[in-house]
Image (tube, rainbow, N blue to C red; front, side, top):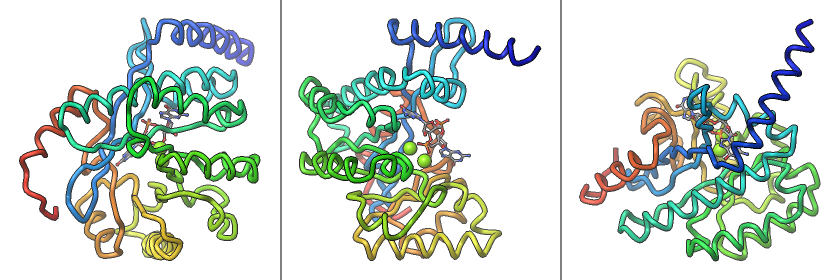
Length: 271
Ligand code: C2E
Ligand code: MG
Ligand code: MG
């Protein structure tokens, strides 16, 4: 029946995912984030894709769930971290600016308990200053083992690493927990942003998240900004930064270099 077919397919995919790690068939795309005060790209998010030998370029949704299930996500995450930090170090050396690179972490990487050592090793081998690395974490990841994870995050923060809470608003979003999380930045989930110009509820929620984050001394980034109308509303609400197709889709590293080079000579203006 269907279930058997699905599991055979799954097994085949898992086998080719293992090979992909050995051969490092992963490619990183980068999506710019723009600071609303300066109108400049100050950081970029590393988003992994799999250059599959026969199926083409696969998005994370096609293989991250399986990678999580099988535990292969830790190895993939390490490859992404290594490559992203190496790229960021190169942008820095090429005079493209102090661009911070954000890497998404999965719960599995935290459960293994060696995430700090891996980060130390990667920063050391690539020479990237710690303040140019940001980790994107979710609430559910932190809450899996809250006390231990908060201690770990505090330790990473003392090294100068930036921490961001991803997809905010979709998980527990418990305010009593939030104030304990040692994060610098809150990323509002794109589900609130996409319809904020037509849904007054979504606009009200977005405004409330921004005000709350600011009173907790956190920066706020809005994800999924697709239109000028979104941008204007977010600016008026005092949001610090935006990310989304309106600024740029995730792009290959060579394209990102062009984008960063283009902004070097541009005056600092509000967009
Ligand atoms: P995320 O971290 O929330 O990343 C943002 C996703 O939203 C990206 O999808 C991006 O392409 C998409 N996006 C950005 N702006 C817009 C917009 O304006 N409109 C719309 N409709 N979508 C937008 P992508 O690249 O497919 O990544 C999906 C998810 O896969 C990421 O969500 C992240 O959770 C996960 N992921 C990606 N790379 C890694 C990785 O290296 N490690 C781990 N553990 N997870 C990763
Ligand atoms: Mg993210
Ligand atoms: Mg997100």
